[in-house]
Image (tube, rainbow, N blue to C red; front, side, top):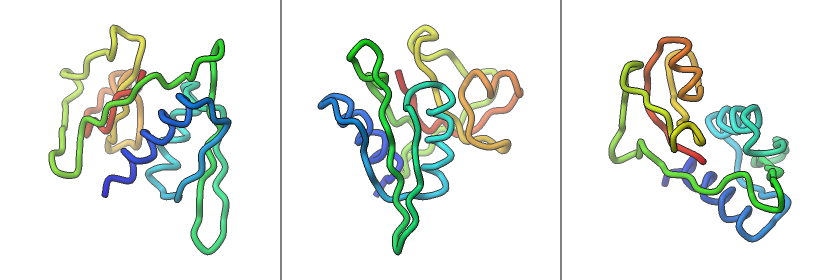
Length: 127
């Protein structure tokens, strides 16, 4: 099961039905991606709720009544990993979206990866 893809689709679908927040199981990868999405303005905030099974509550961001996350596409899947070098990283949706990469320096956007001169696994694109 691809838990990262489930989280991204849940965020997209919750935005389409105008929900304020969405809750799901937490993991280190999910919280790293959510931190990046918060910094880039795609979500308002997130809270990790401790308990017997840790969960994360994601508060969605809206702009002019429309969800900030219009669509998301998973690039690297568990069945087929997609890696790229720094020279092959291209802008997403003519610069209006972003790609999220898993690099040796951590989870970062395509712009950050080009600035740091590092490539890695393209996890997903979002716009």
